[in-house]
Length: 299
Ligand SMILES: [Zn+2]
Image (cartoon, rainbow, N blue to C red; front, side, top):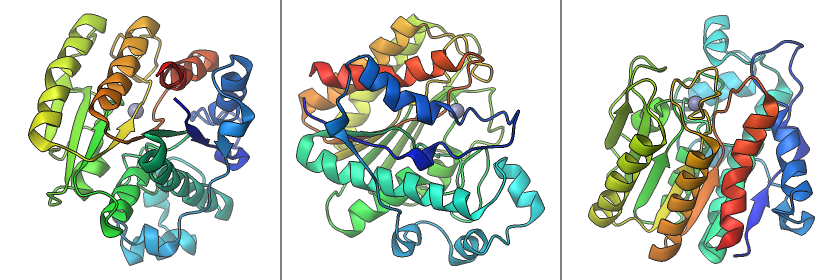
């Protein structure tokens, strides 16, 4: 299946030496996709920054002004965990813009993927956990506002619960948030999603995949979405420093294959974002992220 990929060099914003966020993965992932023959350069497009109007479909004016003017309090900046700068805010706008454009491409091509995104810890009025603006929630609200989708499923398989998604979409009957995550992992306060599946520490491939294959079809049957955003975090891998879940690379492959095949068979357009990935070896993170791109190429 032909698919477009959102990417730009600005996704890999340089961070101070020794910073714990693996920013280099955003530079390495597109290179790996081409080197491995998973994608060709023609599939990549350069996203536009999300407009202020788009951002304000989801975020409060006060929060956006604090970001735009770099006046967020030191405490609020610490919660985010990234050094604030004009170029960081521009990067976040590109990340959100990429997810919006992927959604639009998915409506024509069936699927589209961003090499970034999945910033599911961003709330309407604050950020945390390396997330500043909530790309999937903004893109969902833009699709709904433009009448391009009526019932959206946010499928969040990052190992951390999408507390920002749950909070932002709590009262939105047109958006169903399904999150499968480590129950004992961050965030320790988990606002309720429409469906939260909390996993015990150490869950492996079999249990993980059987839970996914039990719940996802039920959600699709009951909610009947006409669009899906998939947050494909790879911090579920056993090697992950923050994950506490033990998926093998084969288990991850089966997760991605199952999700892509399910939406393909049901003909539900899907925009895919990345998410967490904190293995000590950055090649493992990049390999993990590349899996979903490789799977899409099969269909
Ligand atoms: Zn995560």
